[in-house]
Length: 505
Ligand code: DC
Image (cartoon, rainbow, N blue to C red; front, side, top):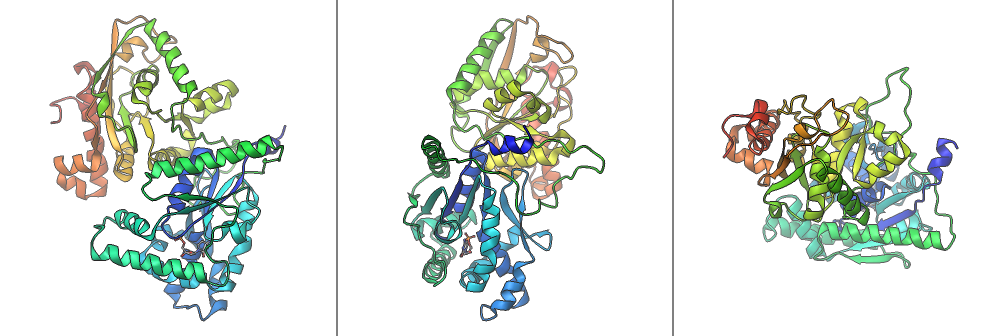
């Protein structure tokens, strides 16, 4: 079977996700796509990028031909999971710039120009033709993809949407800026829904999701459930829901690592869906692993497990002295925590059919170590941004002698950028149970998994080292040391290595 034939047998739908400004389409759609292993496309970015260029060049809606000319410079960028949530102009990533208030103010006017819409229509259809995609916008279910397999319409009151937008920008919800945001949203709603061509409107066959008062995770869950339900429905009715997936119809992000000339192109590895719920398989697997571990040692769990948040992004950072560590942390803590952990694992593991299936069930995400840390970082950020638990070993590899080694800065950067709650964990004496270089574990009286107090790195750093907190480069270095010293404080003295010394307050 060719690679193509294999990928074509993966089921996948074309999902239209429409809704007004700030209804959460982009963030919810992207997170749901990650959970489902789907591609994602935020079509609003196309209109925003054209508008941004138009503002820069002083081209207004009275010059349709001038606006259409700008369309050719705009490209959506695919990340390694095929998600089109970034936009470039002439190769330069301008995603942040196009989300600014100047574009907010002008984009609805540019988007109502029929010629601009016509110029972008074919592009959007081409992207969707590869299937297995969630495409977010205003007119996806009505105009761009009227035959979509599933149409969702995400909505919330203008007040709720304005409140969320103000919160995102760190503004008080009752201040004058928030009032201005509400006003602008209302203006955009009016223009978007009254324009003659492709107005914002729910397709008659769309499923409405009213999201007022919902937690972000709950809305993502609703979308994921709706897609899975429709997948099952179509599969049950005998309708062929297979599609040629994941060949983005646009070039990949320029920052993505390319294969070196002459280096053999490796087969792409399917991304693992984010482990978001404890399923029976994880629970059963954890039980079996606990039984096996107890044949060799007694496991003591110390610290305050109840303090670990039961919702929102959590970054578990542990020392790594043994192959037993992920089992000691995952199998022993997952069920008590009530949430599964996600992990990063080398891609080689995913080349073995049964093993690959097992590690995916355990929430391990493939990372190509040959492609540097960039890929690992992106996978990790996706998990945290979607509000889930990620467990990492900041040292990167097992310690040869059980003592802490110098950690990489990646974990601190993740913690600082995502704002996730960091939970330090010290796994004591796992190096005695199963040291590096030994084929099998050996009998050991006990090992201890100690859970430290959760903290947010931005806040801890601001309190402990305010100067470093102000400087990006120093913040990641100081943040790494802070995390590692908190792990060290949870370990027996002999294992504290270079992060020993007086424990942090
Ligand atoms: O989703 P957003 O706020 O990023 O979209 C920006 C603008 O783009 C929105 O005000 C209307 C326009 N748009 C559109 O007209 N059709 C789409 N499919 C997507 C966006």
